[in-house]
Length: 79
Image (cartoon, rainbow, N blue to C red; front, side, top):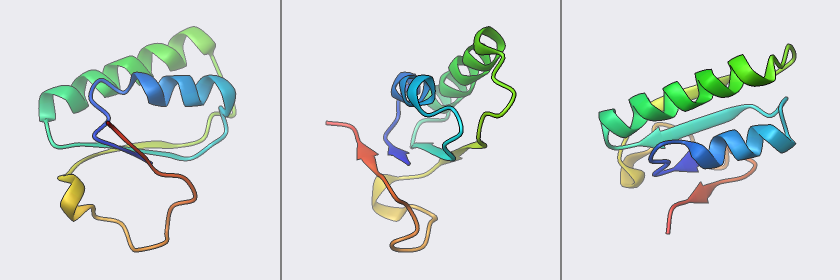
């Protein structure tokens, strides 16, 4: 999970190294989240990764993430 992902570039870098990982990308800004989706779509087009894991995008504040406690293996926050 990436919290406060902005344009989602780090998520694409994670995908470069772990394409089968299941990702959850969150940001409070709908505009940044739209750009993150666009960046991931571009990554998928360029890489043509057939077995890429699912990637979800959620608009949420870092203080109120809609995921259960201890449900993520790795969490990266901006800053």
